[in-house]
Amino acid sequence: METAMRIGELGQATGVDIETIRYYEKTGLLPDPVRSHNGYRAYSQAHLERLAFIRHCRALDISLADVRRLLDFVAHPGTDCADINQLIDGQLARVRARLESMRALERQLAALRGRCGSNHAAGECGILHDLVAAAHGEACACHLDTSTGSSQDFVPSNRLMRGTIK
Image (cartoon, rainbow, N blue to C red; front, side, top):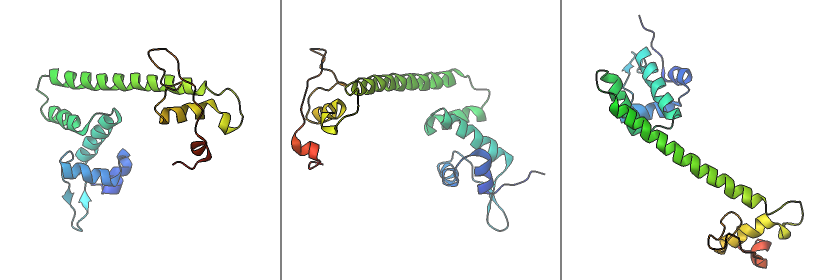
């Protein structure tokens, strides 16, 4: 006979928050469990395995809509896997695009960090000057002027540097 788990035990076994489990039930990703005689949800091994599958997909940043599609393939193992391949190819493309975006962000931050090589008064900090320049719509080290390939030097207004502008 299979031992039933309560929601806290299921959450602990899978690392999924209780509210997330309830959300998955509400949206139909996780089937409703039976209720024990005292009204508590009683989860089975099948719930544990399905929730572990969902959690693994989410760890791969697969959307809930795509998790639902994958669960449908699990329920219909005779289905051709071309759509599964396409789904994962799409996810891989999204991850690669985010990685490229993160690399660009890294380059921007490195360029900005290069504007201040030593410790001195904040009013003389190249990083701060560039951030203020950007706030004024001017070029900064992290967003070079593409026509000239350089950033513009900008001295921030005294009001902004004194913190009177928020």
